[in-house]
Length: 175
Image (cartoon, rainbow, N blue to C red):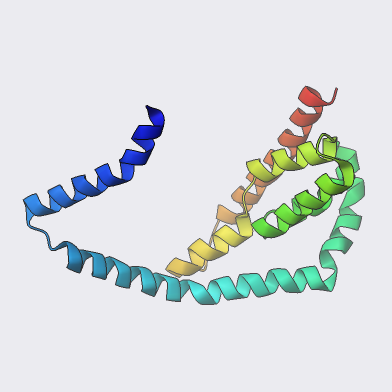
């Protein structure tokens, strides 16, 4: 029954929109083309921001800066109870979703699926956000240059998720 409802949802919503438009005598084609045009202009506004973010992430990765930060943060990670291997994931996650996925894949290949590092990494990956990427993309698309408290609050939320996620993983699964 649920499968039928899921497959019938898109045609149902489409019919409702069409009936609503017919009842209100709305020209659907002109509305659709205007929406498509607005969407294309939004994409064109986002291209410079996306390009700058992708180039910046690649430059940081290629320069070896992530490895240097990972080495520097390993003692800090050990002090707060994080597996040292998660330092690279914690550094990469706010910047790049695909980069952090590749770090997690590397952790799983190196330590195994059921290891503390891989399990805590999966929890951290799913409970944090690509904060710098998202903030740059959304604020850049609407032209906001002063993010005020958004960035520090979002990074603090990410740090809280990292600490709580790794601690709860250790306490609940790896006693």
